[in-house]
Length: 248
Image (cartoon, rainbow, N blue to C red):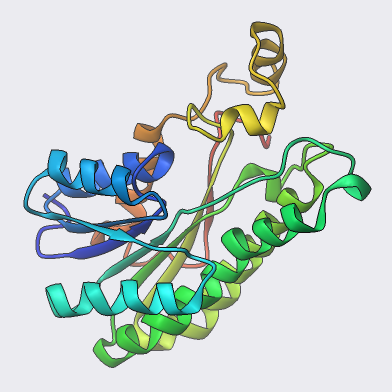
């Protein structure tokens, strides 16, 4: 029960990696807000997970929505210990010059602006308590980019740099900031990364991962649990690869 007494917000928490993180946090004793743009999925998961789970509809690229999410968590629990910026989006594999402006703006808002907005909403609260943990879910794409995912790759590289500079600035306030870099996983985004989901394309994708499998939500939950627990109290500014060796 490594998170007993802790409270956490997980954006994009109703599916994929986010759901894996939510489940692991709840198993370890935390109270968790499942913050997702899909309100029905968040509600359903909260009911499934029990009394310590709280659903919240949020558009992570919208300041008013993010502020309302933060306020709801603080009003409900009195404090927020952990923030997981997990919500993410990609554009389909496309030559960089052909990605539409709308798709580019969506990637920027969900993958980048969200980190800025959640920091504005929750860092002052964490500073007032001189404690807190922020975990940003980046990607191996920010370290070892794949062709035709250019603007997605760039957004995750930005997130890794943001993690490190946030860690340096917030350390004196008792706030740790880390990132996870998963390889593509068994999540709703997998088909978007590959363009289409066929056995041949899966085999080609898996051939780049030495351990020979995709990341699973459980893998991310376990890694997030460690970085957000007191066991990692001396770790900040790290972008941990959860990638089966993809970036070696």
